[in-house]
Length: 93
Image (cartoon, rainbow, N blue to C red):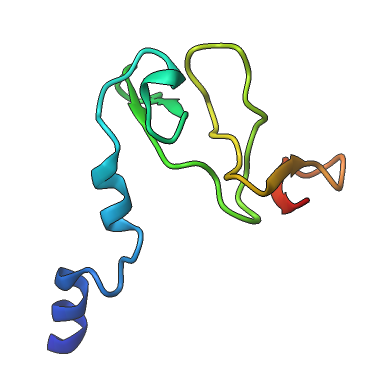
């Protein structure tokens, strides 16, 4: 148990935690973000920069609008819908 807590605190169990340090908390347009994804926070009504979606994660294609509801895919992935009943997911091109 102590080992798990130590790994959690050191970031070993959270490999993506450091990724969020590169993103700023407030944005008004996706072009302001390093990741090119300004994601709306439905709870607070604000927006923040977020990482792009990885493989098999839900996604939406990048739009011309300023703020996203769901981030577009990372480079090399395409946001497609294989089944009409399922949401779009990032897939390899």
